[in-house]
Amino acid sequence: MIQADRQPVKKLPPGPRCGRWWTTLQVLRSPRKAFQKWSCRYGDPFLIHALNGPIVVTGRPDLIREIFSQDPAHYDVFAMAAVQSILGAGSMLLMAGPRHRRERKLIMPMFHGDRMRAYGGIMQRIASTQMQTVERGPFAMLDLTTKISLQVIVEAVLGGERAESIDQLMSRARSLVEKSHPVLFFSPKMQFHFLGLSPWDRFTRAKTQLRNAFDAELLRRQQDPAPREDILSMLMEARYDDGTAMEPEHLYDELGTFLFAGHETSAIAMAWATYYLLTHPDKLARLKAELSSIDASRPGDLAQLPYLKAVVSESLRMNPIVTEVLRVLNTPMELGEFHIPAGVAVAPAAVMVHYDESVYDRPEQFQPERFLEKQYSAAEFLPFGGGARRCAGAAFALYEMAIILGTLFSKYDFRLLENRPVVPRRRNVTLGPSTGIQVQVRPV
Image (spheres, helix red, strand yellow):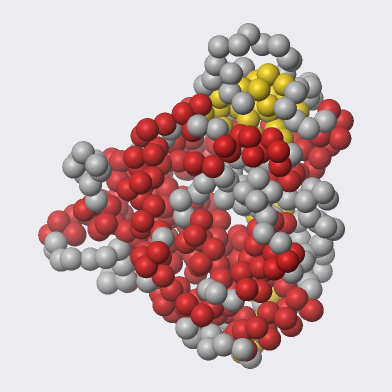
């Protein structure tokens, strides 16, 4: 529990003393391997010293539950100095306390309930249209799922009335993700300009181009104020409890966050799901049988299929897109046997608890059935974080993944062309497959 007034009675947990750069490099390269090594050597929890500060990492469900159950006022945003320059101060991801609650209350309805289900037909249409552009020869599944998920989030943001605007935003958003070098997120010292050639120079150019595309779209809407139902329109019309509207700079930051973070995570998860299904023919056969039992052209029916949802969950368990959930303490905390002072971050690690043999039987194996047989707690299954800061778009992402995977696998047979096992590799703050997952396809 949080102890604001007590003097420290216990030490911080032990951990590696290999220097902040080397520690950060190991986490960047392979967080699961590094965390397993350190937990075996030092126990759980353990302390690491990274470029963005000291972090207490844990994969224990009891400690994760303790972290998620605390009043969010006890936490601040991790690595604010580095990430704010990237996402902007108006991104909900960088808000804390009452400001975060206020923002979340405004945005959550846009990704839930009837509003979310209204996107089902759009998701199916985009998946089918993008598949028609695929050539007969080999292609990368990650490229396909990226195009699909990016178009989904762009159309959700802008609506589908102008193909030119959608194509431009898709191009600009994808460029921004491609220019997001991992080091930019882990140290503000790497955010420097150098003759227009540094990673930061490339990123800022891409961000400016995306901002210009938003400016053009906002100007067009001012000139044509027709009623619309997309997210941009809802953000422009939304009002906080005090009646105020979102400031333009704030609006840009939220839109950029939606495009930046809202498509890549889903694309990676769908690519992993494809890989696991194609390497487990029995699981693929079970999914195909379930898909053939319904009218797969109805997105609402697809989204309710138990085994399809289990496939999505198991893929996220084996390869969580965000490997650990980071929060900085602004009040001391007693965590297990240890006293954690203010200023230190705590990090529930999905890549640890998702492979905990006391929670998951044979965790190294792809077994979607486990999600049919048991309901895991928020401290055991956390692909979208947990507590008051759980990803606001989690329901949207799960819905999207089920509909798109269900649409693709009901209409096409895929053949895996990879000769070696595909492993996780760092992209930016996320991990993705080490290859694009090469496949060939033919209609069912």
